[in-house]
Length: 454
Ligand code: HEC
Image (cartoon, rainbow, N blue to C red; front, side, top):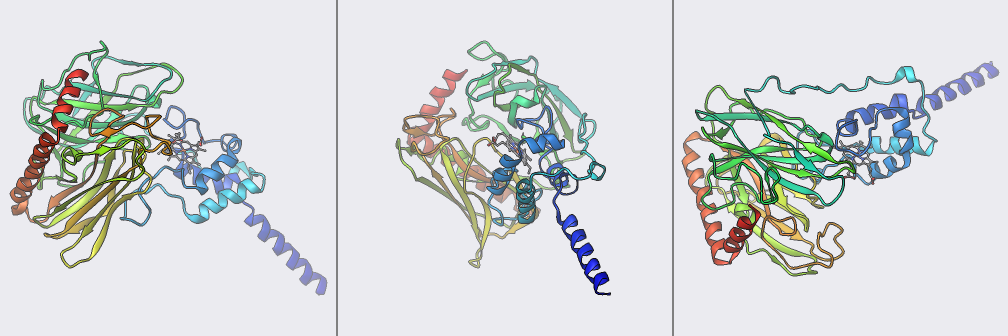
């Protein structure tokens, strides 16, 4: 009897520890397939695949350290500061499990227990697009060197005004493309042919639509690891007849010469949207009027911007913009009753990750809500991302060595009849920013720089 009991005890203890043993097949592969493989697979921008046992084992200790520090999966919005959809984040338990597995010598376990390798759509994710545009010529990229920013202008040939529900981007050399911003400009307002260097497109990272008097608007963007999505029901962005489509691309060179000739698929709405999307941006116009002037070596140069909403709105998504010395970007909403709501906080801004963050549920912001934005720049030599060594004075501009700064919420009016109020409000803010930029010299410098680019 005693023996039996003891035997039983020992057996169950063994079972327990066998079940507790972390193996690749049963515990690690599911985490990696769900959280890493979108980027870490052949042809994607991550530098290596993480699919097989050997792939993961080979980099086990690095994986344990980059997951523990939360460097991977990449996600720059502070957790818990705003509730976002599709947040790329491992749980504390998952991180601990990876650590335990590595410490335990990375056992493979039973290969029969492996989860299925995720399948990714090869063709269009969102189905057949209504309009397909392609860069007229390939753009050659060298094997190595600094990051390249290039704008490509493609005529749409549209003979009537359209409304865009989604844009899907298909690069020909996916590995070299880090992110893309889409916009439209009125037909012919930007050069469609080769730039001053004789290559297709033109350089610079000026935000399209910033040039005073130039018609145009944003159509969203794509960054490494993103899957295209439709705008929420009933929403769409305008793409007027005769417009040119602009791709502003950021290339991160791969060690191999590549040629990129991207294709974009555009999905139209059947009818005009029920509601207009507005960009609630502070400071306005990417900081054009903010008088950005960051002394060389300055560690915590700060600009602030604010706006008070003239009507009730719903916010769908939020994004931030700065270049390389941008460091800490934070936006809050103070409601008329004094409640403070988080909008977005990026405590360690990284230009390489221009994500747009979609709220899990749209955020209601009543009339009279004040949106406050604070952007801190680190222009010291301690900032590893500082493109100038030794640091140089940094002004507002479109080169990677210049700066910009803003936070933009995508909002719609809660009451349709408030749309003209919002339209007027945002237009006036832009005009004020242009006036401020003319007065502080930003406009003149920008136009000169812009001419030299073309
Ligand atoms: C959204 C795309 C994306 C996802 C998701 C992603 N990675 Fe990465 N990963 C990258 C890119 C791009 C790089 C290379 C550039 C960099 O270091 O930022 C990288 C680099 C790495 C590195 C090398 C870091 C170094 O210091 O050299 C490791 C290790 C890594 N990832 C592991 C993971 C693991 C583990 C996961 C899942 C838990 C993951 N990544 C999820 C895109 C991604």
